[in-house]
Image (spheres, rainbow, N blue to C red):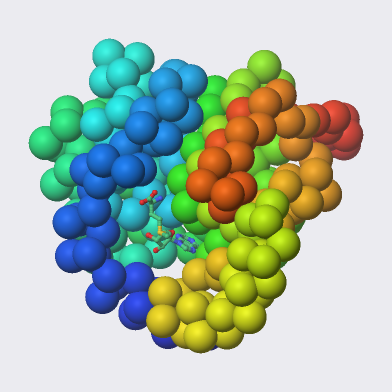
Length: 208
Ligand SMILES: C[S@@+](CC[C@H](N)C(=O)[O-])C[C@H]1O[C@@H](n2cnc3c(N)ncnc32)[C@H](O)[C@@H]1O
């Protein structure tokens, strides 16, 4: 899908995301992964700020990125409501380049399903995250049940047209193919939901 159309689709989904911001089915997983976040954080595809209520507001500064202006507007309101020290950037993540080792933590919840080249995106996280920092992922993708995986692959063309994101991604493989070093991976809901605690893997020395 063209980037312009994808942005329009996400712009239109703001009300649905706002209604689901406190969704109790997701809240426990969000809490579990966000509990490990600290310091200077980059949250990619921040949406309406569904993770704000789970951050320790005393310990974080969150730089949030989203290419949907409507999502950014909503996240701004949520940041003030949850009193999260935030800087919001309205941009396509693919157009951004932060200096190496800019962040203590990089957080992505339900965004790897959207990027055109998710391995490349994870490799950017690898560079932007401090060597002793954390990369925290809560994602959806293929199940470890072959029947469910086949179904998700079959419905992806329709699903992606409706939702904008893909339901047929093998998140485990994507992460394994990136430079990240996985410390812990949990899979829930038949393996469809992935919680991943990772750290940056080996980085080539910057050349001057
Ligand atoms: C499925 S929603 C998830 C929102 C939020 N992270 C959450 O957990 O509820 C994906 C979000 O990523 C944003 N997004 C997708 N691709 C992006 C890109 N290339 N650059 C910036 N934002 C992007 C969308 O606008 C949307 O807000």
